[in-house]
Length: 298
Image 1 (cartoon, rainbow, N blue to C red):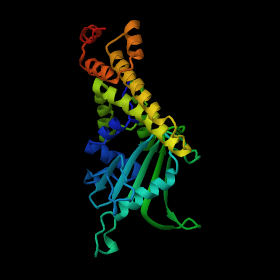
Image 2: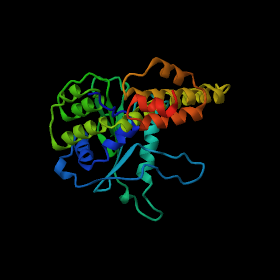
Image 3: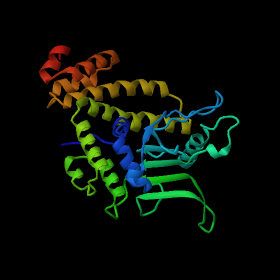
Image 4: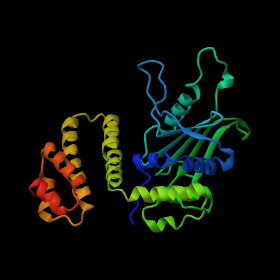
């Protein structure tokens, strides 16, 4: 069975909606005994802004432990400009947002960033790197800020719990799950959650759409903004939306079986976004290719 990709926004956030999975993930990544984690609450991922012109920080998954420590967990499948500065920006926001006027600095709590990357950032051989504030001799100054970088493309050197999470995030088919060695309660629940998500046609559709949005539109917008290539941007976006809708229709129809050649050609050649939207809704509701053709007159 083909599995939904946990590298997509929707599946990634759905996975961490389960408390036992959150606890087990943090236990394995931060080396905290599972039984010592009393609670891991999901909190608002929109970080505060003091003034209107300040940049808003929006996180993927933000958790808070019982002692007040905050952990930002994010999945990043494509390299971004100024990635390291972006991480410090988020940590600074997380660290200061709860301190109110008149309160002392003792109320500030530890903040951790766990970045799961589908690209090589560090250049190290290891797949899990941890960074804290140290002096030149390596003596630790403080652990109040901590950055974990998990690189999914690295060759796995061991068989520990962190490596098994990487196997889970990289899993594409049912057979890949058999490579996971650590069978604790949290990991077993994560495996079952992934299997359950993979059985949902709606989830597969959302996964493909989210991946496409990440891969094509956001990356393209960032590239165009960086290079100053504004000419033709509006026209290109309009064409991209039409092509994207056609791809979405074909993606859903593929779940129903073989797509007849004439139907595929008709969908690919359609330029009216309203018609494509209608076909998209029909494809999501249809139980067979025949039903779709009948409803859409194809």
